[in-house]
Length: 456
Image (tube, rainbow, N blue to C red; front, side):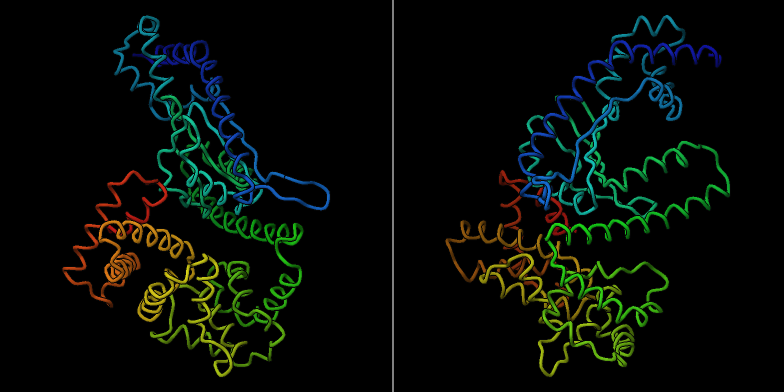
């Protein structure tokens, strides 16, 4: 087959898409957008996706948009991804007339199997809104009518440019489509990056250098987003102005000492602002000369018994120890435990097992993987509530077995069985309860990641 024949066949297939497929996809796209808009509107207040200010009320921090692939984009895709050769082989196309004869089969193939013909996007004001939108979908996915979300457990993913991306594969009445959730900054940058970089298929040293520059820009954009979020929190009254002033004062006080330690990576005080506000409470006026603060940083970083695997946690602990001396304040370990309990609202009945798991993790693991990621404790809380409910039915309300089961699941989830051994009998309890949980008709997307972690 000559190049000229290949071009004619490609154009004929593209014509089938334009005449026979595109209008149908437009109808489906509008139906999908209607569902997304309706369901987001139902739950946006619950997930902090709308707010009031001094002028407006119920301001939505997101919009729902979509598109159907343009004809020229499909033509380009057929060649860029070599799909034209797949179609030629699959339908045994040897000449232009074969395309016309097999028009219906080709139409069905393109309509039903190409997963990016329809693209939908939730465009949010800021990254925090992206996270809230993803949480909404994960928690309420069963309520989105005929839309199926296929890979929620894998979201978000980190791109080469350092930014996270939520790109969800979906189905609607057997039509595949893609849903992206992006902030306005991410959306604008991704579109520009795509045009400047990814649409250029040539290979060069300059392109490789540009790739590294894109990663750096991605990190700067992430910092900009965090700064804009802080401003919005103050303007909407969700963060107390006095708290913001305290954080600024704190950053100014410690910045020059911290900078030499963090010169090789991006560090932002906003990453630990919530923790600082909780830990320090009303002690922001206790800023001394901090002559020994650098020593505290070095001590924590160089002492294997104290070192954590995150500078954020090292800085957080050093600041707390500097402002809140042990003689008159709880230890950092105790105070951070209270922060976790307060943040995810752990019930008193679960606090004993949480304390055991937390203390063991703090004493034996490097720390930040379990301490800074509040989501891990949130997932653990979700798991333990489910374990208690299941064990309650399986073991005739035996408090001893139920409490033992909670500890077993917590040990396995936190990966600390090397420090708190589990007997064969306890392992059998774990397996029996786990099988019961997985066999129940439960919302598996919400706990799928948790169960996957248990099985690792």
